[in-house]
Length: 427
Image (cartoon, one colour):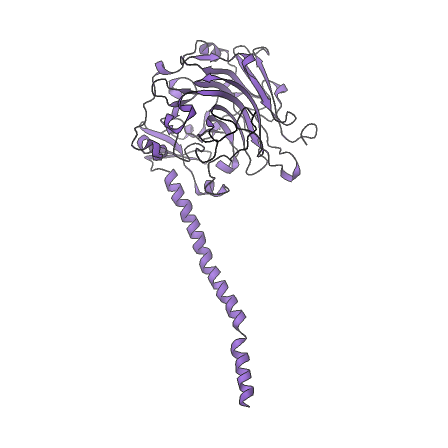
């Protein structure tokens, strides 16, 4: 009898082992899951605290952006170790800006209108501050990882590629010129191309380049407009900058998402949306960008719009190796990401989404292509000095010209872009 009781007690006391273990595991998950989520949120918040500096005024734009007016000497750029204890350079006077004898004629001949920034309708930043688009937790959480937030992917390069291109799903339609240069300028039409993939983008920009195209020492300064739902959370075209000193390996980022680019403007916010934009068959809006090297201090300045009033800020010479001297190539054009969704070419548009042959009013353009020489003078680029490249002209193409299509005053220019996927030429 006692023996049977011992067996019963053994079965009674040992059988709940599995349910108890499962309950303990469930309890552990319930305890650790919120802890992990809290830790991740805290990590994101610490990153945001590094990016978003304390503002003296915040402006709520109609497009949903918040523009923070940050004291110039407390901006994110000065967190860079190479810029520690540096003062912000005073914008150079007009006498140090590149001279151009033909610019007034170009302005007078323009039949396009100027695009500006949406947030200007809601307020302004006071003197002594810089206008900075506030980065949100949602912006960071859309990135594939915190380490990749605000950075371009590393690229594989072909030895003969004239640019930061190739492979890795990036496609281009660009014009380029190779020589010793100290800056470049162009006027770029602004559009809102459709983006198919959530992590895709479409941009139009200029590149200032020096270094090896098939190594790890490429220096690049970049500025233009881009549509990037992943980076900004919408489909509006936005002013952007980028830089790298090691071929996109570890240095550089978009806008002010890492230390580097030093902003001086209280009127222009990098990353802010641009409006109005061009429409097919409707009004055409464009913006003028100039990047040039200050001959006195060696920093690379960005100007948005016309004249000294459009100075945005500068890339300090200390950030670069090759570009601490001069550039060896300039590029202008468009770039998209093609991840081959559903096995087909992306339908992400470049420019207006129309091919170059559509011309003015329908196709996107760059006009008045100029470079800055060693004497700090702007000179129109001869058409025969401009080469063009498009990896897949059935998807996106480019066509250069020099005032031979009835657009007087445009100098060297080109139309470019395309719809991406289409049954006729881009399956």
